[in-house]
Length: 363
View: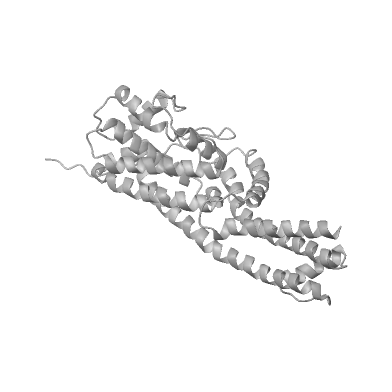
């Protein structure tokens, strides 16, 4: 019996250390079963409640604390695993009962020192427990600044995009607003910035997957919708203006769907790694035309007709549409145009193009 208790305790302690190392120490995407299980258990009640609410604002209020709470619950789970694991080890090497073993383990793990066994066989386990508690808590404290630093970098560009893409962001709106203020030549700077942003998000959100579920401060902003808007703007630019510079546009588009694929991998979402350009889209041609009309209304130049541009746009969008829609559904992103459906029916929010109020000068 004691042998079984010792084996069970060792497995729990080693499993806890493995989860802590994979989540907080190893700087690469690594599977962590315990953390994933805890997050799913925390997410489930929030999602069930959000799915019963009618408006995007109400859903956002419910889902906002979900990811931060998952972090706290994960920390408590790690400490609970070590508490139980060390208690089982102490019970295995002594005659302590379950209650006394838990008391001894807790006293050592949290370095409180209110319980102390007089058995020499417990000293080594007590020392290990005493070291484990501060290390785990210290790692968690160091983990939070890195987590929120990545969150702030992500949200800075999402907030800046609001003036360029509306709220919520929409690909055609980006090109419409740049055309309205005659800044189309500056699009390369936007795409260059979002290429780097995609690389940063790809690295941070696969290393710390909980960031995927961190929501923006405002309900109409969302990191995934912003990325989708930039990729759609890039695909539209390539489709309608083939004679314009393409290097930065292509790199931003490529970085965007690589980012989505790496996040899909860490989230265990299956996807087609080599889609065919003629594969069908979920976005209808009618919705495509409504976006083109928004661009044309602000004077965006078009070298191709919508009929000619559609096959090119479809060939680009097929690389990222399915993943973007799936992730938008999973995180319940703000229902923006061209972003797919959600788990429950919600009203699509379409951004409004600002009225051009520049004074008209007479000649």
